[in-house]
Image 1 (tube, helix red, strand yellow):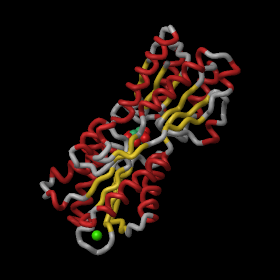
Image 2 (image 1 turned 180 degrees about the vertical axis):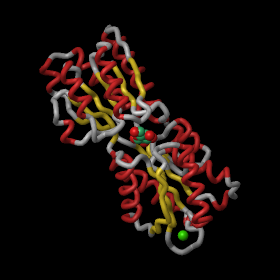
Image 3 (image 1 turned 135 degrees about the vertical axis):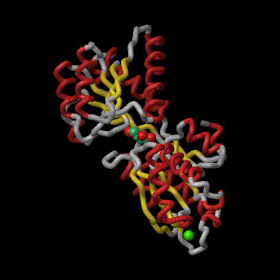
Image 4 (image 1 turned 120 degrees about the vertical axis):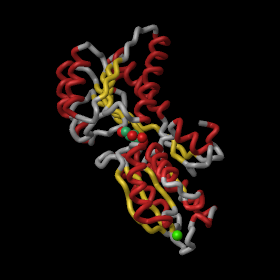
Length: 305
Ligand code: BGC
Ligand code: CA
């Protein structure tokens, strides 16, 4: 199996690919097949990823797993794979339907972006309705900012929209103060948050972050600026990374939404096994799109994760 990652510095993708490796090993042992997994990372360049895919194919991999750099630009990879008749399992960065229709041996494994946004919105609504003191200035509205992932990523735009819509539908009055694009990264989020704090001072009551790493970066900003506990807003993330879960346990994050890497890794490994070992009939029955459910994580249930 060849795995192509969009970048090497991504906490969630790092954890997910480790899980995939483990699952492949497990299935190999069960089916008594030798397995080999090669992982490459593309420092956020689609051209570099295309070259890496070429290398993985040349090295003779039987299945490709691709975490696209640019999810709207998979054509070259599809062409190369088709030429060698090697199936491609895209994961986490979802190609558009038209591209998945380019060939029958293309698959997708990930989470449902809409679901993760709805669940984050529900978590935030539950917390706000139970804790009226979150509305610090008592104006009946929650002043909020958003820490956003990469523009163009399905998990950035959709998560934000769905979380905000869900909060509104739950009867929470909102006022958006601003947003910062931090491309999923903790350090970038810290910088964006420092700007937002300088702009809005202690008016910010809620931070919705598209992932845990950026929520943690937002919290880092408050630490760096030496802000008192009472001026720190409530934070919500998505992923349930090791550090994210730790922050929920410590009460620094009010909640997160579990991006089920174990389930996704199982789906990827199972698909790969069927694609390389089963007969055509079984292969034809495989679903092209595969989504693992998300789940809400709160201080009450965090020990289960
Ligand atoms: C995760 C982010 C990650 C991104 C990478 C998202 O699903 O929530 O943490 O950085 O995928 O593509
Ligand atoms: Ca308020």
